[in-house]
Length: 112
Length: 112
Image 1 (cartoon, chains in turn yellow, blue):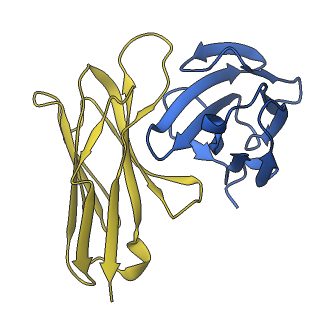
Image 2 (cartoon, rainbow over the protein chains, first blue to last red; image 1 turned 90 degrees about the horizontal axis):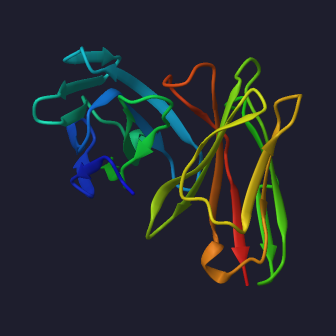
């Protein structure tokens, strides 16, 4: 079952524009992570934000977390064609031994 | 190269057959996770091993089994294969539970 649900399912923008993807989840979390997957390839870890953090930056990536709304957003600034990929949020529940549960992802297409 | 090695990259087999997928985790990572990715179900967690011991079980069918060996490599065995088992199977590893996962490039299984 999916814990995180990304929105939108697909996003198409031009190079240089910003891309924002959202993730909502249902249960209390320890942390939330974002991953990128190029078509048919393995997932690549982008950024991890802990439940006590509200915002985190990494290069052109900005992630926010609102635990009261159980939601997170991933902002990619100044998008490039190479950012074309699927982006997944994954949540780690706040209970005992647990593993990441992934959403179904947002497909981002950045056109030159 | 992520450091997580999966073999084979592609596998085509007939219904009813049995296959073994292999994964070598990144050096130093004690946790190994197996995920199944299909278009309709997204990324589904199957099973986790930590330092040779089964740690967590997800939506893994009884026809599927896995193990982690003393050298920490892991194998996922899929038997009595059905058409619906066609999917991408990913192995991931992490140094600590709850940290970011490093994914392999996956094994694409096609059951005909």
